[in-house]
Every structure is written in structure tokens, then in C-alpha cells.
Length: 105
Image 1: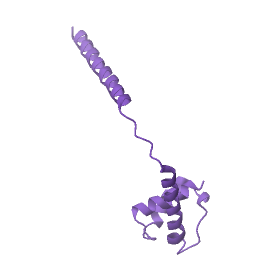
Image 2 (image 1 turned 120 degrees about the vertical axis):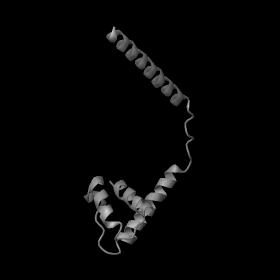
Image 3 (image 1 turned 180 degrees about the vertical axis):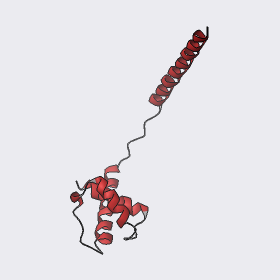
Image 4 (image 1 turned 90 degrees about the vertical axis):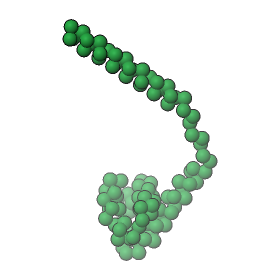
């Protein structure tokens, strides 16, 4: 008797879960898609150009600039974490430089 009750409870839970997942998928598919923003490519290009400028001016102020392709994207995370404070880069500048460096590849 206990197994029947437990089995019935499991079936009800499974049905409820299935309904919830189906409803979530339906709602997600009915959600309006964001409009494509004109100028996104320009915006990205401008950000990469800003990252390059910061890289050349801030990092090149103290030492020769390493070739961005000389390190992996993961290596650059550690390099940027150690060098950004020395170059007095804020979080936004740090992100711009990192994005520029990894885009060079």
C-alpha cells in the first residue's frame, strides 16, 4: 500500500514538473525578441579602439607592449589582474583592454 501511495505521489510530482517545464518553454517562446540595434558593430569597434588606446597609453607607459597573441585568453586574465592596478585602470578600462587583447587573435 505504501509503495502505491509513494508511486502515485511521484507520478503527480512528475506531471506537475512536466506541466511547469512545458509552460515555461511556451512562455519563453512567446516573449518578444529584442530589436536589433543599428550601430552595434560600430559600438564594438569603438570599444575595441578604446581598449587599444588604453593598452598602448597606459601599459606602454612603463614597458614594451607584449604581443597580444603571445598569450591565451586565460593567461591574459591573470596578466590583467596583476597589471591593471599598477596601470591604475578602473574596471571598465580593464575590460576594454582585455576585450581588445583577446580580439587581436
